[in-house]
Image (cartoon, rainbow, N blue to C red; front, side, top):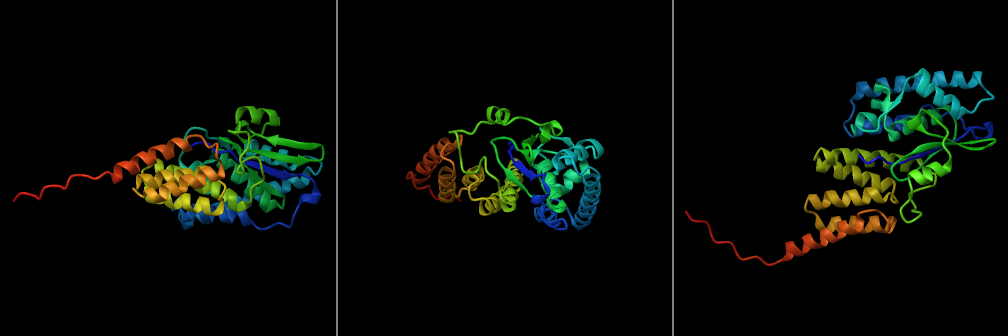
Length: 284
């Protein structure tokens, strides 16, 4: 998969806490993994038990360090005590879907990011995701200001300028980037990654279904529209492919490669409508 970026916003002051929601978002993420046939019911049950155990440990650690940043405490737990590590090369869904991340103690930026979101949600902290091209990271709102938490650098605090230079937004801005995402939109990011992996595996029907789900819950995710268009084109659904490409353009006119895709599609449609000589009847 192409690395996608997700910025997690975690408030650290008590006024940002909400009542604990009993693994609400974690259950949704684990259920998504089940629904895309990544895990079975026994793995679902194990994942819920393990996530609950991590939440209990985190709650104790936070209670024993009330003056410290919750994001710092969670980062230390993730990368030191619990030994989670990053995965930046392997596109296997085990490093994207929450059950696989929990089991292997390894995740992509999306995998580690959604784990962080699930923990924050269960602990009662307000957290949301924000995309940047090709990457996602954590931003914590603390009393002294914002602190970024770089999940692929073991929670290191990186300045905003570093992200802007390393992951620039084509055209300067797009509606899908640099804003807090709803939990539904975060699910769209996960579904987008599922679709990409199924497409690489040439499981095009499953890829198409995942991209459709991604665009429904995250309509401004231009990459999902463009990828859906590419799969529709591979399946021979040329009108649907063009409609998806157009939606991608509407969401982000500066999306790299989209104009080229439209040009290639137009050429294919012209070829498809070129009159051909009638074939001769078969000889017997």
